[in-house]
Image 1: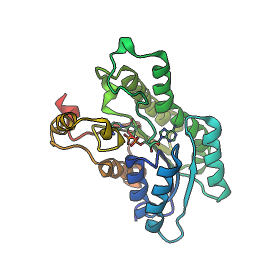
Image 2 (image 1 turned 90 degrees about the vertical axis):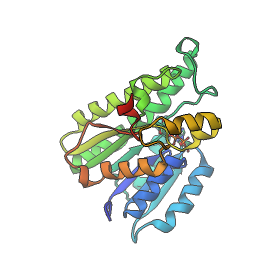
Image 3 (image 1 turned 60 degrees about the vertical axis):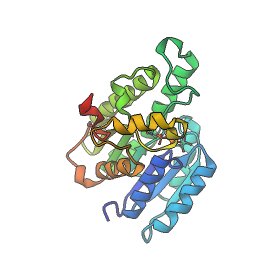
Length: 253
Ligand SMILES: NC(=O)c1ccc[n+]([C@@H]2O[C@H](COP(=O)([O-])OP(=O)(O)OC[C@H]3O[C@@H](n4cnc5c(N)ncnc54)[C@H](O)[C@@H]3O)[C@@H](O)[C@H]2O)c1
């Protein structure tokens, strides 16, 4: 098992992507500290993951809004109370809260702009402050931030693209500041079959499936596999990188 003896913090663990990461990591022997703003989705993840845990591994789950410092602290406090030291962080929380998925920049409201930046960046910021000092002290840590290929700029997603560019930039700064014993990398997913798909028409889904070189949508498991690689010692000489997991949308651009 590739993560035996390690503990991973997974934010957004109630969603399809976070759940796939949590499942994959549990199967590889990790203990998991999981959080989500939705208590019901988090409960579903606990039910799925608990039977997969290796002997001696634990799941600690606390509902919370990871963009709020006090709620992030409460999640970490619960892990500490269970004598769990986190050495892996997978920052999944992000996206666009707005009802309209595609909005020209000139009509994006200031509220949406601020909310998108908070949703995509603040959890990374709070968790780093809470967990990285101990990683640096123990001289071991792996952090994976989820950006998006939209970070390169995307019509109709000015706020999201810019916020995901912030995630990519933050990844590099974190890699520099937390080196040499903490690896920080970033995954830029293409179109992945998660909750966001429920808001798409059949035509849109067909369009997105045809776009990548590999001619299919990404699955949450595709992201979980990449997270596993970047969280394991198999990637120990990789830091500050942005890995597109997009079926080849990136080279096709
Ligand atoms: N799905 C895609 O095609 C795609 C593409 C590129 C990037 N991404 C990125 O992948 C990540 C996951 O996206 P997804 O589509 O799987 O989302 P999702 O909606 O399926 O899951 C996200 C989970 O995060 C939780 N969450 C939301 N706000 C939270 C908060 N403040 N605190 C704690 N939990 C919170 C939600 O309840 C949900 O369970 C995001 O960062 C997103 O930007 C997704």
